[in-house]
Amino acid sequence: MNASPVIDVADLTKVYMTDEVETHALTGVNLRVESGEYVAIMGPSGCGKTTLMSILGLLDAPTSGRYDLAGEPVAALDARRRAHFRNRNIGFVFQSFNLIGDLNVYENVELPLVYRGGMGRAQRREKVAAALESVGMLHRVRHYPAQLSGGQQQRVAIARALVGDPAILLADEPTGNLDSANGEKVMELLAQLNERGATLVMVTHDARYAAHARRLVRLFDGQIVAEQEGRRGGGSAQSPDAERN
Image 1: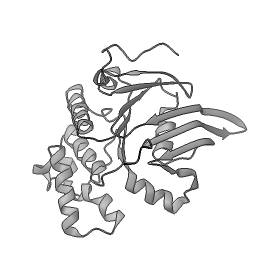
Image 2 (image 1 turned 180 degrees about the horizontal axis):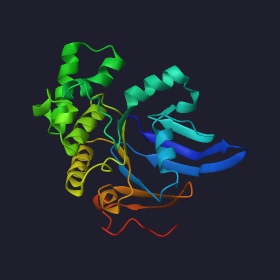
Image 3 (image 1 turned 180 degrees about the vertical axis):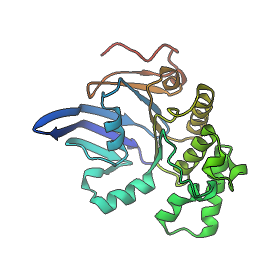
Image 4 (image 1 turned 90 degrees about the vertical axis):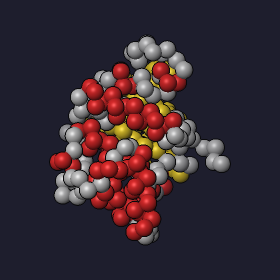
């Protein structure tokens, strides 16, 4: 078994240049996520959470620093290999669900496997059914997104993220468009998936939801300023608003 962490980030920096003004979105970020971990990233608006998630998801590249994903140095990947590597190793869950309205539930979840290629229809059907069963949505395979509640749409989006057996599941404010009751149900589902072995990294602004994670990481002004155990990591249920290290 590979002992390397799923995510290994060292001295990561991201600088944006606009009108000759440098904006340091991330500065010297170090982060390791082991297989099977559940990490929540918190911080105020503009602290670099979205930038870090984009880099972890291979949607953006750092200005400097090292990022190894599933043991692979991603800086060495060209655009084509990066897209292929992202499709095979990362599952995304977004705040806005991003389901395709004219595809039914089955077709939405199957889509990443179709793009990946190399898999027959019967095998795709088996994997889609397993993913939908894991989120309790197998009975809705022929429904369209408009026929589902927000909570149900997010469950389908999670199934789509899981269907390709990714090394890591990245969730960006997964409860942001849900009411508190449905948000809590989605968080319970993510916790269950983690209990079954899924590796999760989640960005959230809500301390209640962050406490579901095993480890809490706080960002401030583009830097990691504190880490602590979440409620499920064996720590206390205190607010994640820890003091800076």
